[in-house]
Image (cartoon, rainbow, N blue to C red; front, side, top):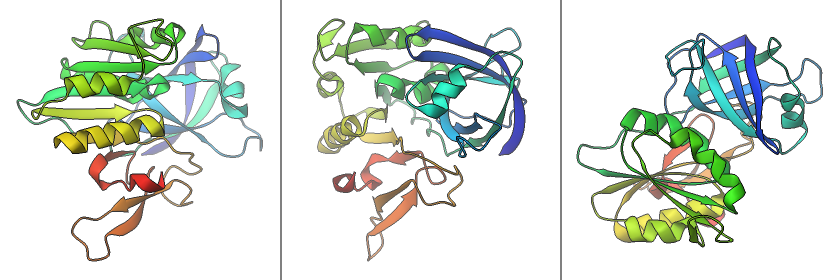
Length: 264
């Protein structure tokens, strides 16, 4: 983990409210599922850093490379991301990371299924890039959000889409696609809205399929000190089988069987 000042390489608007941010950073090892905490202002407002998943590693010319920088994909949802969207190349941001535990690699012979909704697609890119195979099931509200799939084209994945209004792919929820794809030899990686993750976890549990979920929670510190991102988990071996873990330091990736979904 490092805490450094990083120069902005680019901060491109992709669509209304969506941006691609490149940061120059000689990083430690970054794994699929890691995230960083950014300080978006030099002042006291906003005071706290904001968490962002790492989309991919970049080189000086924007090509995939190791160790020269990172690329983030974000959506403007509040004051912090609003300030970030106004930043220009050459400005600097305080960055803390890489943080979190990342996704485990699948066992040999396992069929890989990635399930995501909206911006939950971000932490899966490095995993898809590393594996070069598998099926990506993407859920969105409408066709307008399917531009988020552009970064996944050419990675060797089979991509299937579901939209709530039926404007692209199948009409309905992405979990309906998952139900058709599940098989005993599968392993599932998922990130997205909590309701989607709950449904994915239940489907996988019913079929006896291993599932890893990347949880999205509000974070203040990113290192497990403030206790603001606690989630209740199940310890299957302990007599007292309920305890709490921090999404930032113990996660954000968890075995879905270890999460107490009834309290989320």
